[in-house]
Length: 493
Ligand SMILES: Cc1ncc(COP(=O)(O)O)c(C=O)c1O
Image (cartoon, rainbow, N blue to C red; front, side, top):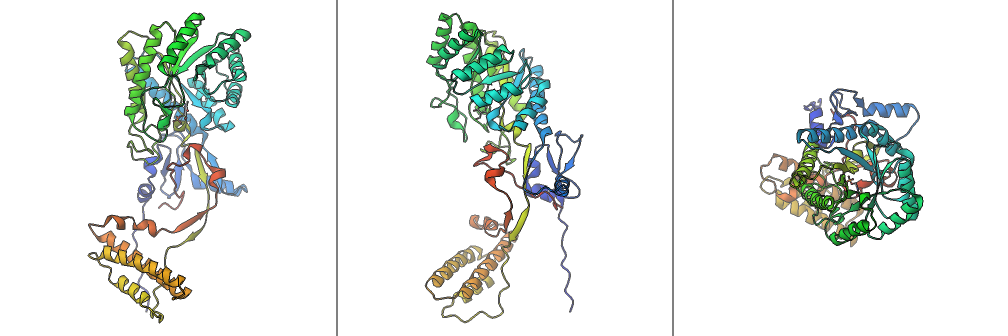
């Protein structure tokens, strides 16, 4: 007797794209080609090069390198910076905004030397600068950033050494801004500036009443650790006036938090900051720069919603809303439009690095076949499980599901009390899996599936063993406790 060949339908690359959500999280950079391989378009466009990831892996293996590998696609950094600047430039032109846009990269988001270097290199054309939140970051920024038109934003706690470094950077011609986060910093900056003989550019970090929802909500709002409240701002303005130094005040800064998923939160924050900016201009400060911090979110899950792992806006909407909000607030008092600064971190780097690792082994969920004859036992556990298996029908699906878990737990208890053997427990657990598989198949053909059973595939998953260490190979440190796309890179057809 010959076996009847099973008719199988051909799996398509479109189905893989859909299954792994590649078109949703992959932005314009990742897709699947006709061979079922993941391909990267580093320019983020249909035109330009497309590189197959499996071919890159083959090239690495041929050269004697082993997985896991952290692959950095530096051109993606360039494409992201270009997109940010071009989209702001378009909004500025379309909305007749009279100021310009300057971006900075916050080094804390990815401190790798090659990343910061690549960003400054790609960003040179756009005068893209750097943000330093600590002394070491400032040293790195001064040594890398040679563009005199780019901004160097100094946030974070500043001691005398930090301030001296920034003042020397100013002397060298860099556009260095000291953003005052706590009132006490002002005295030290003025004192060191007088000693070194430099006119410092000062900024104020404000504590907005506005808050953004999400994991970083604490970065904004009244109770945020960072920034100055309104009376502290007035106090600093008065101090600067008394010292005849108000002309040093050039920038207003706020940071509502990272990964702001709702565009409304961004708008509300920009509106409040614009009003404070307007008042500072009316107090006589030259100002000229409004720094909106980070927050531009990444759509990790591709849902385009205001869920924490997504965003409910496009880059175009982000730029338009910011430009329009600032202009609307300031035009009422004919306040000149400032240079807009943003400190986009995750949105710049999220797509550019990939952790590649090989799968060492698979632990399959598939159970051994049901024995033709069940072993004789002192109880009817195995018979009950077999009965439940034979009884799976669309009508009784929930009852079978409940029974099978009951018997599985009973098998464990009987084993603990020495009433069934290891072999019998193994048969019971295989029968349990057979029942779940049959329930899943039955559910797939049913119209109304109970909620609990909709999640049955999580229980039926195979376990893949990947050769990598999360701690050593994290491609993006901001990925901790966040959704992170995972996909095979070949055989997607
Ligand atoms: C002051 C400041 N600017 C910018 C960023 C970067 O934010 P994002 O990665 O959301 O762009 C951060 C990160 O927390 C920050 O604290």
